Every structure is written in C-alpha cells, then in structure tokens.
Length: 417
Ligand SMILES: Cc1cc2nc3c(=O)[nH]c(=O)nc-3n(C[C@H](O)[C@H](O)[C@H](O)COP(=O)(O)OP(=O)(O)OC[C@H]3O[C@@H](n4cnc5c(N)ncnc54)[C@H](O)[C@@H]3O)c2cc1C
Image 1: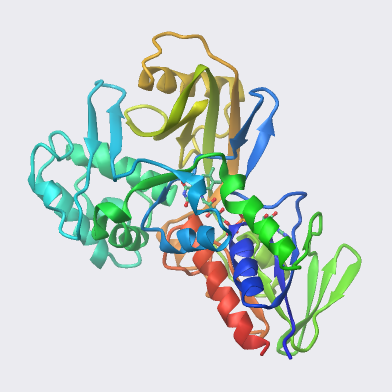
Image 2 (image 1 turned 90 degrees about the horizontal axis):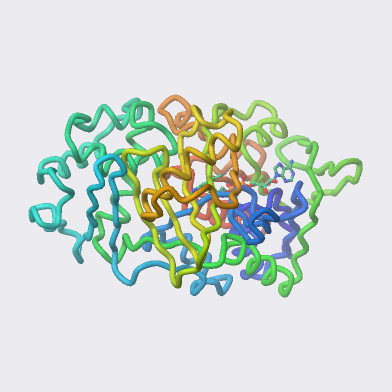
C-alpha cells in the first residue's frame, strides 16, 4: 500500500521529481501556482517578434548527466542542439579578437599546453590555477582563487563564472564552481559539448514531461497556489490551496519544489537563501533565417553569451543588477550594439525586440547565502524540499534543479512505503 506524493511547484525540480515518481508507479499530484509549468525555464509566444522565445538563454553541457537523464526519461533527448564536438567560439567586442576553445578528449587537458589551442595571451599556469577551486573553503570567492590581472581571467574565467554563478567574480562562491568544472571540463571533450534547446525550453524540458505525466495519470493542477500547510506533530496533514483543502493522508508525502521565499513562507523556521540576483535577456528578430544554432561567448561588451536560432538572436546579461531597472528601450539599444557587432551587421537599425527581465533569476550564489541552503529532508518526516536553491552542492542550474527533484523523489518513496 503506497500513498500519493503531492508535488508543489511545476518548475524543472518539481517536474523531474514527479516524472521519476510516476515512472516508478507512484501516484503523484502536482500543484502549480501559475497558469503554466516551467517556472524559470520556460518559453512563450511573443507578439512583438511573432516567435516563441525563452525567458532566458539556458546553456547546458553534455556532462550535465542528471539533466540529460531527465530528458531521456521524458523522451526529449533529441530536442537539444549544439556542435558535434566541444567548441566555444569567443569574440572580444572591444578588440575584435576572436578565438575558439576546443578541449581535447579524455581527462588530461593537454590542450592547455599548446599555444595554438589556448586562449590568446594565456599561459598553461593560468588554467592550472583553476585547481584552486578544488580546495576553496566555504567563505572563498572566485576572485580569491584567480589572478584577475591575467588575460585569461577576462577572456575565459569571467564569462564562465558570471554565467554559471550569476554573480560577479568578486562575490561568487568559489566552492560552487569546482563540481561544475570537475564534471564537465574535467572529463574532457565529450562532457563539455555545449547544448541549447533547439525549439525552446518548454519543448525540451516542460511539454514532454506534462505529456508523460498525463499518460501516466498524474494530474497537474494549474492556478493552484499552495497558501498554507498544516504541520501537525511530525508530519504535514493538509495543503490549503486558496480555500480548497487537500488532505495529506497517512501514507502520503509532500515535496515542496517552490522558490526559497515561497518555501520559507510555508515552512515555519526554515532558513533559506534570501538574496537573489537578476538576469536580463534580449531577443532580436533578424532580417533573415539561418539554419542550425550558434552559441558565442562575448567579452568586452554588456552581454556574455549570444545564441542564434533561425532568425532570433538572444543575448544574456547575468548578474544584471546594474541593468535591470533601466527602461527596456535603453537596454535594447545597449544589447543590440553587442549583437550587431558580434554578427557583423554594421550599424543596422534596431530590429523588433523583446527584453525579458528576471529579477530573481537565481538565489545569490555568494558564500553567506550558499551556507543557508537546506537539505532535502525537513523535521517533518513526510515533507521534502527540492529546487535549485537547496543544498545540491551545485550552482542554481537545471542540473541542480533536476538532481534536487530526483533526491526528493527517492526520499519520498522511502517515506510512504
Ligand atoms: C534568465 C535565466 C537564465 C538561466 N540560465 C541558465 C543556464 O544557462 N543554464 C542552467 O542550467 N540554468 C539556468 N538558469 C537557472 C534555471 O532556470 C533554474 O535553475 C531552474 O529553472 C530552477 O527550477 P526550479 O524548479 O528549482 O525552480 P522554479 O523554476 O522557480 O520553479 C518553482 C515553481 O513553483 C511555483 N510556485 C511558487 N510558489 C508556489 C506555491 N505556493 N504553490 C504552488 N506553486 C508555486 C512557481 O510558479 C514555479 O513554477 C537560468 C535561469 C534564468 C531565470
């Protein structure tokens, strides 16, 4: 006899948890506050562009094993696109210098010993300095581990760190970077191939999961914000969804897969990260479509990464605190300057665009806030936490969100058997 697992939140963490449970034959019910699933990883049709766009550029690497396992489970592996081998074209918008990083196969990074393969003006020792992340203590920032005067800092470490941690090098938590480097660049070419959702984030991460959950008889209740929970003794006994009370029966479990502020509001005494950092994305409709996708790292401009799919060029500004409150048209002008330079469009006029501001894109991945990340278990035996902000040991990414969802699924199976 097994009970139902009530999953609160249909972002990537909640969906990956629900899919894992449903495929294991569990009864699952999902409650989502919004009218759609996906949370911070979603697509929508934009009227100004007349295209489906993402809330923001999301880059995965082929070493993101949990994210790829999730896509496999929902039948969406083929929905990612990227080069057949690991390569990262970079462009310095100030100097016009361009280079492509091509890590070699296998775990020994011999490419860093070849001046032809290294980032221009870098030395092997600049890369080996990255080993310091392996020994970074919990209070160290990325800047504590690097020589910020070296060209490699500006041409590799900074765009990588700002994208992965959504924090500046000066404040980002060094300890979060090592697992990413170890699981991707540390395993060689096959683990660091860049991947993006070819037809949008929802087509890859959300819609196939909803279809599978539907087939497996696991309903998603949209527009169902969980407003309160009854925590009696050592367990959750009910969920309050705007007046509609759902009983959590003796063999049931609850997985809270909501952002940290929402979890703190529902669970008394729960310490969570409190600060967040913003990401701004600009999407521009170009005058012609090109086949395939391209992914380019940008240095020396406002933006850090450019994705191009068909006739849409999308650029990201992570750690965007300085930009987020600017009006959209001002932001568009600044971002278009980077896009036009990167795509060699000269002084082409600003095309149709959409600026998407995500004020709370991730929790602030700085040492003090990282220390607040709670684990999956709570003091209530049938209540578990999931989300990219929980203590996954990884940055707040799709990979972290999926792993948190899988961890919560595993523990909730144990709780109600
Ligand atoms: C602009 C941007 C760019 C990013 N770039 C990358 C990238 O390049 N690579 C990468 O790996 N990651 C990236 N990320 C991070 C990635 O999107 C997140 O790590 C991931 O989506 C988090 O998923 P989650 O399920 O933990 O949280 P969320 O997506 O926040 O999901 C939580 C869900 O809970 C719902 N909810 C909230 N309160 C309640 C309630 N009371 N009751 C019911 N439901 C509730 C919300 O509506 C939401 O759907 C980016 C994020 C942003 C915003």
